[in-house]
Amino acid sequence: MPTLTASTLTAAALWADLESVRQRTPLVHNITNLVVMNVTANALLAVGAAPVMAHAKEEVRDMVAIAQALVLNIGTLEPAWVEAMGLAFAAARARGLPVVLDPVGAGATPYRNAALAELLAVGAPTVIRGNGSEVMSVAGLAAVTRGVDSAASSTEAVTAARALAGRLGNVVCVSGADDHIVDGQGRWAILSNGDPWMTRVTGVGCSASALVGAFAAVQADPWRATVAAMAVLGVVGELAAERARAAGAGVGRLQAELMDGLQGLDEAGFTSRLRLRDASPQAAR
Image (cartoon, rainbow, N blue to C red; front, side, top):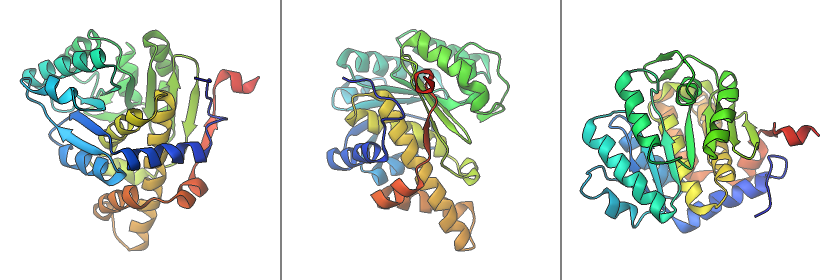
C-alpha cells in the first residue's frame, strides 16, 4: 500500500470512504457507555453503518465474530463491562478487526486508569480517539481533567499523541477546536471543521469514535479512515450549527440537525467545507 499523506488525501478520496460506508453498511460492535448509547447508535445508522450494542461477557466474542469493527468506550464503567471489553478486544485482535478505543475520562480516577491499563495490556488498539486531557493521560503524562471534559487543548496534546502513536504503532486522534490525527509512521493531519456548539451536546465525541470504527471497517488504512470519519463529522457539525442558528434554535435542534446531516451530506457540501492540512514532518521538506 503506498504511503498516504494529508497532502494526497483529497476531498474526493475521503468522500469515497463515506460512500463505501453507505454502500457496504458495516456492522460496528460497540461496548459503549449508558449515557450515549442511543445517540451513538443513531449516528451510525444515519451515516449508513449498522450498530450493535452488546455488553454481556457471555456473547461479546460471538458478536465480534460477525462484526466488521469493534469500538470500546469506557465512559460508564463497571467490572463486568471491563471484562467484556477485554474479551471482545482479544477476539477482535484474533480476527484482525479494527479496534477503536475511546478513553473517556482517562486520568479522572484510579479505577478508570486501571481499567485502561487492563485493556491496553491486551494489545494496541487500531485507533485511540479522545480529547486532549484523555490522550495525554493515556500517554502517561499528568493531565488535568474535569470529569469527561478536557482541560487541555488538542494542540497541547499533539506531542503526547505522536509519542503514543509511535510507541504503540497505531493511530491517535485528538479531538478539539482542531482535530489532530497522527500515526506511528509520522503522518499528521489537522482538520479545522466543526463548531463550538458540538461540545454542548452529549455524545458527539463518543459518536466520533463510533464513526471511526465504521470507516475503519471499509478503509484498510486506519489513519485515512480516521481522517475521513472526523472530516465528515466536522463538516456535518458545522452545517448543523448554522442551520440551528438560522432557525432561531439552540443545541436541542443541533442534535437533530447532526443526524440529518450525517444522512444527507452531499459531496458538494463536503468538498466546499473541508479544511484539511498536512502537518507531517515530511510535508515541510
